[in-house]
Image 1 (tube, helix red, strand yellow):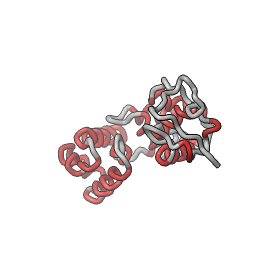
Image 2 (cartoon, rainbow, N blue to C red; image 1 turned 60 degrees about the vertical axis):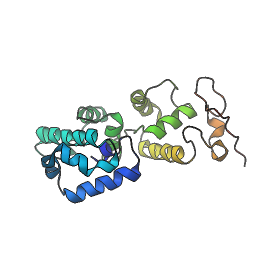
Image 3 (cartoon, one colour; image 1 turned 180 degrees about the vertical axis):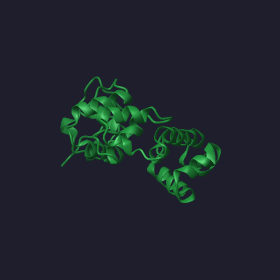
Image 4 (cartoon, helix red, strand yellow; image 1 turned 90 degrees about the vertical axis):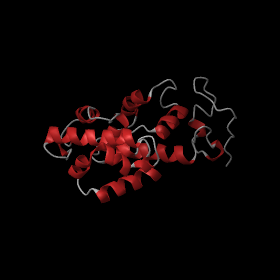
Length: 201
């Protein structure tokens, strides 16, 4: 549920909201019993509260109907494809949210493509500039070596936050300019208004 709270917002707002929610409702049955209107008030600080509260309660209701409880441990023996399909069939759960759960809770090799990973991957030329975010999840599975999903996600996430920022990257601090298609002028990658500075030693 913390992954749903993190949708379209930063950790700075989603983490406190999730912590407060769990403090008020020590088990998921209580969250479901409270209902989406009350939960929306409880998570207001995380943004899109009405939408997220409906997704949270909808997920909990569906998980309980499928499993008789609120555990998703049944995902453990599933293949990555099966587990992804199971999760994305839940209300409000898309490829990124499902990938976060599978990568960090089940070590299944899914690669979460958030806004930072998506942007950096395009600029480096790992994926085409025309590729959509859902398609990027599939492509990352193809190009990232097995066992490196979590490290790859966290590495590109950190790079996107600190250096390869939107709308304009800080290329003079980047260690990847030699292999970056965006920096080296690839014509098929969107450019910012200002030309990036070349990194110096």
